[in-house]
Length: 448
Image (tube, rainbow, N blue to C red):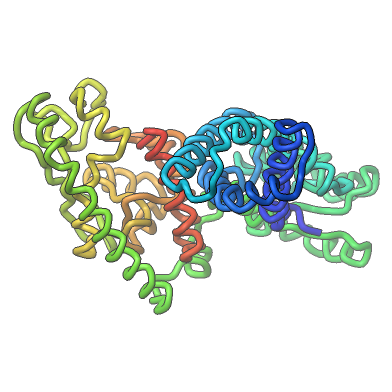
């Protein structure tokens, strides 16, 4: 039995496609008080192209991501913003491609409205019914903050096929009857799953009893694997030398490395060429706001801890030069704030991509000073430097709060958990997902 439904995105995708075509059919039926074949097919072809783009917008908006409880609370606003973008795309499509003989203003409005309601209903109720599974009881045998987060997420979200009836915190277990009490809970709660931290040495004496449960059809789940699958990050309590040697490697991946570098070069050339049209306006804006210099050069930590020099548009007061240290809220210029949220300040780094200093996708490079502090205080922090850094990364699109020019060890630990997930699971598909989600950040002016 799968705890995290790997087919969820596929089911949601086909549900959305059906909703889009049904909404079009219903819009035409309402608009014309009936529906003939000719009218339907005259709308079907152009709207099919539009629906394809709408699905991509949904993907960029994160509507095919794992539906944790955090995402569920934001669902109405996410769907609304996605449909708002879809309406703009559809209007531009019919305006610039007037080859279909229709200008469906009213039909488009009805289709958008109906699909908005149905998509919300589908994600809140319909998908739950379509993928209904009877929940089975589980016991969580672990300690630490990750186990608390896991219990809260699983028990508050109906999408998972289990219910944690008891979490046994190993830090609190001191009595000698622990094994007897534990086996008693399994029997009294009709438990089918045991979620266990296999790396906790305190559980070693219990393994013999757990082994005997296999013959009672008990299923065992590694807590850390489940945490990674649900939250898309690595629990830092798991990270030790043995885990790193098993999961993290700097060995070349010839096919992946070749295509990643090729995509970096082609994309950087296109983006750098297209963005040069913005440079004169950025030059004037920075000069008008705070005079020269226009560019700053910063030294960051790159692959294998080698120092790299990045070029950016200046966004801070010229006395600061964008260097690390202290709270910088009052040092950002008026134009600089806009350049940061739009990520325009990072456009010159496309030349660093072409040089091979950084990639388009990878862990964000940090200043040397905080890296020294983090490397001293956060175990295995330097593992994030085993691959080439990037303009955007898994942590940038998932982590809500980012330390910027200030030391924040707790937030950096959280960010590291996402970086390690990317390093372990990096692939072209994951890079594409990060790139598409980065587009969403750029369009929403939420640069971090």
